Length: 89
Image 1 (cartoon, helix red, strand yellow):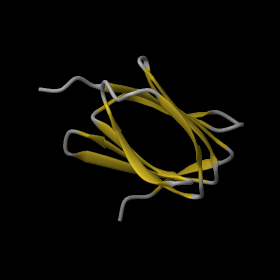
Image 2 (spheres, one colour):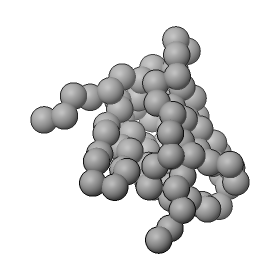
Image 3 (cartoon, one colour):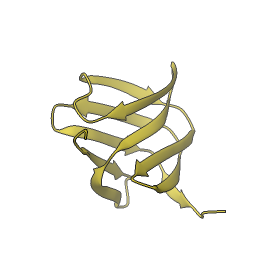
């Protein structure tokens, strides 16, 4: 079994989400991307769109309005200009 990814989603007002997850998909300015544990480090700007967090059978979606994603050996941090959780359908 693969390890967990440490993920933090931060807006100017507060930390919107923090925890260990299986995968995060995000809207990069050069295209959507997914991050798993032990991903190669990179940094990219984000465009407006959904950030989808997968953990086991659960899935949570957050709408972001731009910002930056930073993948390091410690995990993924998204610094969003604005972020709100989308209610499950």
